[in-house]
Length: 313
Image (cartoon, rainbow, N blue to C red; front, side, top):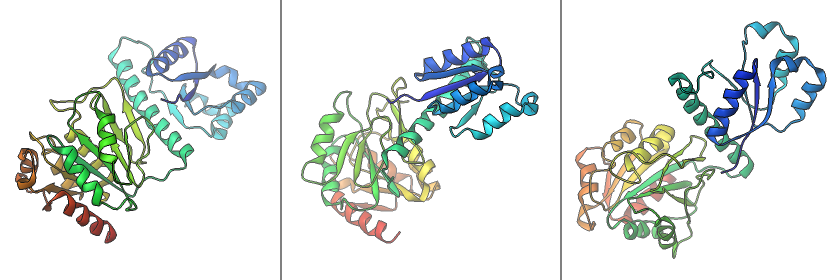
């Protein structure tokens, strides 16, 4: 994980201490920590403006400081994003502080994803589709990818129920004899055209609306399935709507049956492999039973259908 450079501006040393602690716990680096009184010193302002800061966290009485010209001018001149504290930074054991820290972590992770995206010069794919599978999935997904053209404006998020530690073997196996770039999702990845990003079973990831991957190494998947198809499909449907879809391949259980309704609600596509060709038909059958499914076929034909669908979109 790359590390954001964070600047802190507060009114008291107590605020400064708690902010520093919160940012350290999240896993980022505090490069500049100042009291607001120091901002009235011209040389200090010059020093701050010269620092390489990715984001500022500011915990001050903004209304009172509206009359401070130096402070207002400094805020105006900042290029880096500003996160204003909501006043929950004083009791590390308090529920308000814990909740605030969680919200701050989400904001900083999102910011880091955007920074990585900006620096990579990679453009996200217009369309993001989930490939969902369980028992027998790798063979079916490979059949699909071997027919799917790599130059289509789509990236795939592959959610395969699999044991921990096997994702890299899965990546190598489905990449054989096709031109897709297959890899296990890591923090800062970009879902770009021609990529198949494999969701790890060890911890949660999300795909931001800007196409960047955010990883949560300390957060396990919810529920019985790892990774969770329901969670990934819900994430993609919410962020990409009509430019997203999910294809359910062979598998056991009902993972994904709940989220496919959300995908349909957001005007995304829900397709399934024909159950007669599945090693384990229960997962695609559960999806078909929801009534959300709009296309059923073999893996190879689903690839052909998707090519035509994207060309006409």
